[in-house]
Length: 126
Image 1 (cartoon, rainbow, N blue to C red):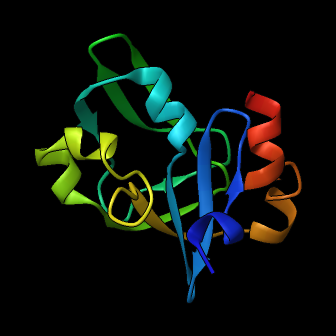
Image 2 (tube, one colour; image 1 turned 135 degrees about the vertical axis):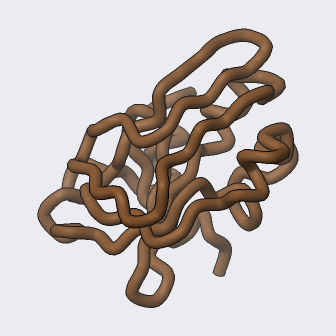
């Protein structure tokens, strides 16, 4: 089963997928394609807590700068430091190795009701 089969996507192009007791959050391939070549990524510190829809990161490409929003609220348990040093890696792989943060979700069941599965998300953005 691929990551895309398990992920839920927000209308602001973030994805969330459960992995054990944690949730992985990243940007969808559509968002990365729209941004173009990524040149900068700022991620939060481990231990920081964010509410659903709150900005948790900033990303810049040769085309634009954008904020990245929390698809569900939670506390950051891990940050993909590799991407901070080499944000361009997101252009090659935004899923397996291109996740942004991992969180302990505060109320996943209630906060994920407006998220779309990948198939429906793709229909929304096409």
